[in-house]
Amino acid sequence: MPWFPKRTVVVPVDFSAESISAIDVGLALVDQPSHLHVVHVVIDITPLEAGEVWGVIDPQTRIEQMEKALKQRLADAKYKGIQLAVVLGDPAHGIANYAEEKKAELIVIPSHGRTGITRLLIGSVAERVVRLAHCPVLVLRK
Image 1 (cartoon, rainbow, N blue to C red):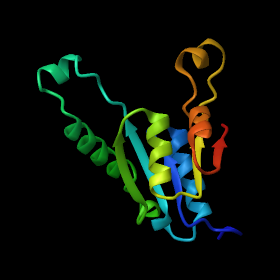
Image 2 (image 1 turned 30 degrees about the horizontal axis):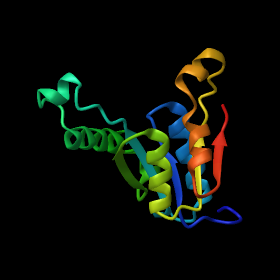
Image 3 (image 1 turned 60 degrees about the vertical axis):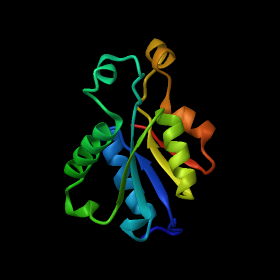
Image 4 (image 1 turned 90 degrees about the vertical axis):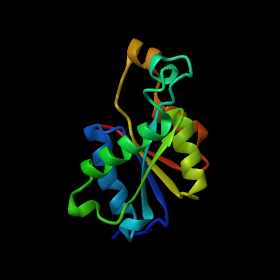
């Protein structure tokens, strides 16, 4: 049990090994698994993309598919009781808004360690979350 257990910790996941490991760190920071909120942000597609125009892909179906995938990925007994959520939008804003909505005391997010031109072009979601979050952010390095 941690020295100062948090009432609410948010861990964003993108299904990478680093983000799944961040869930374990989050579990160590709360006294009950139900105080850990795992969130996945589905990037919103523009109304002009083919799937949207033809009505093949709708936001609700995408959210439901990701919820199912998240439950399957976290089916292990050690994840029993954690809160799972899928939201639609920009990853950094979605994470920060979700954490604020849940009145999180801490966000635990992995850094994928991109450098150079890749970081410049893709950007760092973790870095943007640090700037947008209303609470402290623990960025985990590899």
